[in-house]
Amino acid sequence: MPKRVDKIVIDNSDVIIKNWLKIVSDKKQNDYTSSISDELFQSTNREFVNVIFDSLGNGGITTELESFSERLVNLGWPLSYLTDGLQTFRRVAIDFVLSQHDKIDTDLFSIILDRVDSWVDPIINKLVNEYSGSWEHTVSLQRVALQELSAPLIPVMRNITIMPLIGTIDTERAKLIMENLLDGVIKHNAEVVLIDITGVPVVDTMVAHHIIQAAEAVRLIGATCILVGIRPEIAQTIVNLGIDLGKFPTKSSLRKGFETALELTGRTIYREDKKETIVKDIMNQLSEG
Amino acid sequence: MEIKPCVNIRQEWDIVGARQLGREKAKELGFGTVDQARIATAISELARNIYLYAGTGKVYFETIDRLDKKGLKVVAVDEGPGIRDLSQVMQDGYSTSGGLGAGLPGVKRLMDTFEINTEWGEGTEIIAVKWVR
Image 1 (cartoon, each protein chain N blue to C red):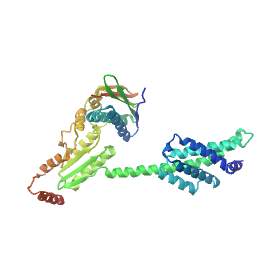
Image 2 (cartoon, rainbow over the protein chains, first blue to last red):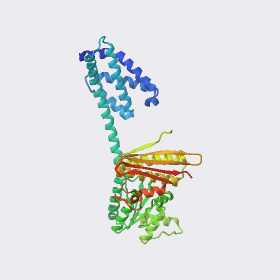
Image 3 (cartoon, rainbow over the protein chains, first blue to last red):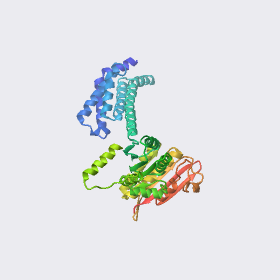
Image 4 (cartoon, rainbow over the protein chains, first blue to last red):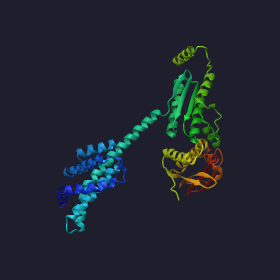
């Protein structure tokens, strides 16, 4: 009996494909795929239905199915296109097989349902796995990329290092900041560390707490921490929150912080008449550092 | 009745989602940059409290558009353990998690109105409004 169901579907593939294409094309009108050109949509539909029948004929997952799903994942087609398409196929196939029988009892009905499910479900599983696998891959890559950007420490001059922070600070990043800061202070033998928060969108109590802790830890190993890049609106919210940042120096801009850092390490910037000598001087100092 | 934009807080990154949505709403309403920062910070505190103490909950936003004034209402709801002693929590420097303890009193100062409904064991609801000046 299951074999007969197979035969009905495969023998009448033309009709089923026609019905399926019609429903899927109708769906397109007000749908996620509406931005895709008609031509591409139709050809993809045709390919999709052929892939489905291919896997019916060969009893399971075929290499065509694999390459088809891989291609759609790469093109960024929505997963719902594929799952909707397969649900539609399930309905069309069941409808058609039922219409071929005069007398329908529950046994026959369950056999047909079983049979059609056994084609469609493995394909759906395969596609969903393929899609979620590619998402997980993307997310893990981005996490690694984010971690690389997390907490860079730049030695700008002898005894002075800068840590520019950009973006949101969460618990994990706060830990990295602390570690990199302390490692860097030891490694570069820094006396002054500038933490630049120009690029941090919101300073709430958690971020402030982590910065205070980091500054305190830096102080314990004998260096000075200067917080720079405090924008006016951030300054106001810090005051509103009632956070005490009085334990270490703070400055509005990196430039001012850097000047303070130079003072603390016993250096000053002075202007000479010839511009070239200034540039040379700075270059010398940089190469020293 | 307008649809309320809502952010579910389930993980730490949802805090960022909540405050970005809030900042967007604040910008639409015509808040200045300082008030935008205040609102974003307040949302950040409320959402972090949900994440830290209740685990899950949600933050939703309502725009208030009256004849005399406009404003943004931020509501943070959770079904967590609730707050046992409100007066203690509203004190500066009180924290059970080793933080700065400036969260809730800070939010009260950042926003214009602040209301807290909590029942020990039942959950917490915090409603805060900022008016456009």
